[in-house]
Length: 191
Image (tube, rainbow, N blue to C red):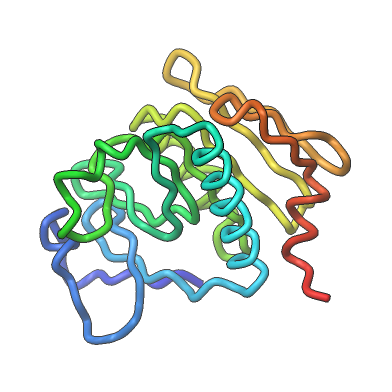
């Protein structure tokens, strides 16, 4: 369960500098700090695989993009999220290289891996924040329901397409990636 601090509201700048002396990670939601639970190993395996897949494609195509795992994205005045994976143009982070790893503008693509405590957050809250930020492509990887939802921004709203089983995932950002849902979700199984 995500815990929210309610002692006071934080500005985005205060959030960037916040340190409670622990390894806890927080998202900033309407000025409140929400402590994120540590991810499961399945969650980490899926995010790492997608990061590596995107990095491989970025390098293959010599794109001026970067892929990050568990770095932040500013989604509003007093809002910042910690997507599992995202892709940005290199120029978006150049002036912030020595600052907290929070992208200040919309990434090209964001991925969230669903866990039991993040279902509403990933499908509802982040969806609306990412659409408002105008992130062109949002993947929701759901190992609980064995599906991947690709949301593409169209006229300010996301149009979604669900993929499952042996269906090949169709990405507007990476149209040449040939992955099925089964292939992606199998990475979360060890052994």
